[in-house]
Structure formats: structure tokens, C-alpha cells
Length: 189
Image (tube, rainbow, N blue to C red; front, side, top):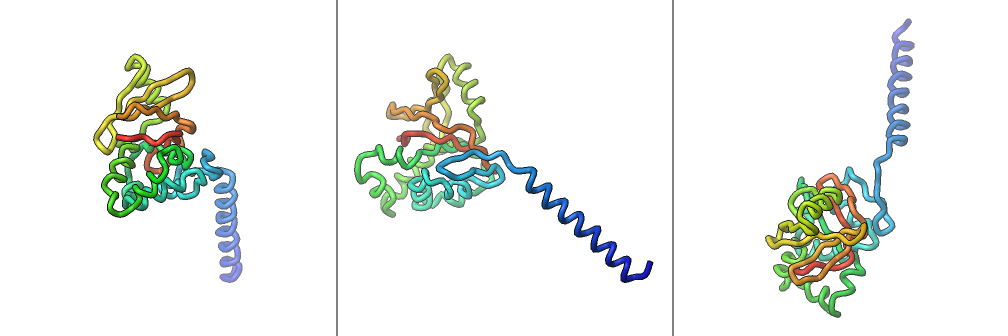
């Protein structure tokens, strides 16, 4: 076989591997969860996924205003209790607009970090902790105060320091640096 033929055969072998890799990548899709009309990819971090959710525009804007983007793109792991835009809309009129002002960054950061747990806790683990705790489980937030998880029927809830409860509406949205649980109410420290 001459040199030109050897190069041609080698080229075909390389191309066959390249095409087989493409086919394999297409058939081995990640298990995603839909949140706010967008697929959430377990290979992406919390911020990379959250920015695509139509239901979390307010949360993303608040995270940016508080300067927490870099933190939530970090290694983690984190468990984020992510309020929807509808949850933020339940707050008294003008609250969100006031919180995102630069002079209120400290309060905004306190509220947002109250929605984050250090570590990755899936719903099954939280449910087991509630069961072991005779109906409730307290967990410390990154902000420093506790939230209390509890159940009602087949639903998992979290209660804040003020006594407000949020229902976990979408659980176990896995991320490369943790997990998100979508909630229907903003928690207050």
C-alpha cells in the first residue's frame, strides 16, 4: 500500500470514530427537568440553568443585584430553594424593586442566602429527615438561620423564621454544583 492509500485509510478510520462519537452523544441525552419552559441540564451549574427559566427572571435579577452569581457558579454543592416570579409577586408591592437597589444589597443578600443550604439535599433525603424528626426537620441555611421542612400528604413544604410556608412545586432539579427545589413562596429570615 502506498503512502497516499495509507493516509486515505487512516482518514476514513478517524472520520468513522468522529461520526460514531456524534451519534453516541446524540443518543445519550442527559436526564433533564423542565422548569419555566426550559430544560435544566445536570451538567450545567445553578446559574447556567436558572437564566433559562421563564419562571425565575426575578430571582436571577436579584442574584445579580446581590453579587451572588459567581458564588452560585462555584463548586458547591448547594441546595437552592428557588422562588418563582409568582412567589415574588406575592410580596407587598414595591418590595422587590426596593430590595434590588444598591443601598439594600445587604438585606437582599440575607434573604437570598436564606434560600440556600450548604450541601446537596434531594427530596428523598429531606423527606427521610422529616420522618426521622417526627414530622419536621430543621436545616441551617447559608445565611445562618434555620428553615423547617415538613410534609402534608405527598407534598414537601419549608417554613421560614416568620412562620410562612412554601410548597416545593418541582423537586430534584439536579445541577453540576447541587440541586434546585422550586418553591411557591419567598422565604424570609
